Image 1 (tube, rainbow, N blue to C red):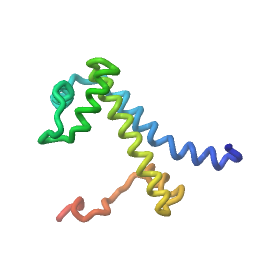
Image 2: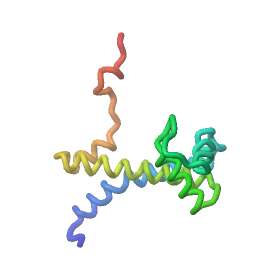
Image 3: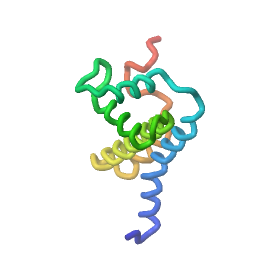
Length: 125
């Protein structure tokens, strides 16, 4: 039960960023044609195997399930990837909070970073 405005704001902070990620994916899904990898995944779904050279067999299984449920809709495949991306954002935020980040861990996702913290991404001048 939500007992204060603080709990509501925590829910908003937790779900706003994943929803924004999903909305961006969903808004751009029908904007361009079918990519060759999507056609390849659909073809792999028609010929299931235990292993592929370039992707795990679960990818073909997900494409098969999407094909059974949504027919041959490539937009549905993109919506599944949008759900997966939003779910990844939720999982990363929850893990960072569980590891001691608190609310600041979610707020940190909103602030843009001006410099990279990884030396491999810094310029070598």
